[in-house]
Amino acid sequence: MDRRVLFASLILFAGGAAGVGVALFAFVGVDDGATEAEVIWESDPVAGDDGSGAVVATMDGDPLVLQSVAVNGTRSVRATAVGGGVEWTSPVGAGTGGGAVSADGDGGEAVEAIETSGLVTGTLGGEQIVALTTDSGSLVVFNAGDGSERFAVDVGGRSGARPAIGDVDADGDAEVVAVSTSGGVLAVDDGGDPVFETDVGAPIERRPLAIDFGGNGASGDGATNGVAVATAGGEENSV
Image (cartoon, rainbow, N blue to C red; front, side, top):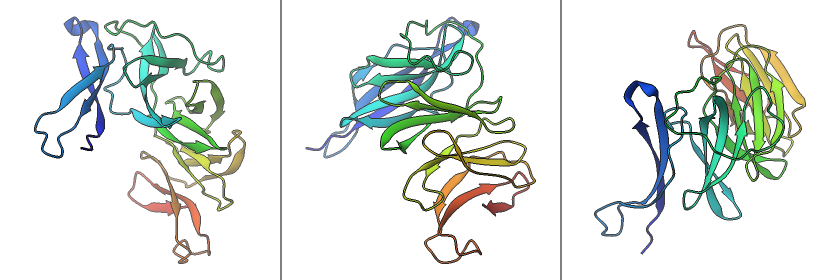
């Protein structure tokens, strides 16, 4: 019987107005005649967002759940392995770059931390990574295996939209794409160096898409790969 393991996050209110904590739960879903879900492990709660921005990366065949948390008042990315053990926790923002730190935050503690986008995972330069943007305008990329920071670059304006990962220039290698709320679009390679940068001249509130036009000329200039964004006015732009 194939019973697939599913992941969920649960908001746990700690002390009413004192703050909230988010715990991860892994459970076996309803399938093949099984009528009830069975929780097989859960993590300790930790302060952070509502858990909706969490993603799953696969390291050596095993899932690793990555989520945005707040540890001792610092916005961080936490990686939780099968069984609920925390593999690493890496800070985002000031002090980022020193690699992962031990996870010892209190899940019920009220914290104030920088705001970040949801997370996105993918392969960059042959390695699994996790990427995010900050409201203040940084694109931050971590190695998913150990939490070390790969690079952090300025996107040219305020952001907070989830980035995208894909081969946007059809060179066979993936890039990371981020946008600013003022209309800037930035694509960088696996070292954080710009591949292209442009401005669509209108506000952007949604995440970009790394797309493949399929060689049908839909982009108007013969390009087969690129980036699509939707401006706040509702108009789509491909760059």
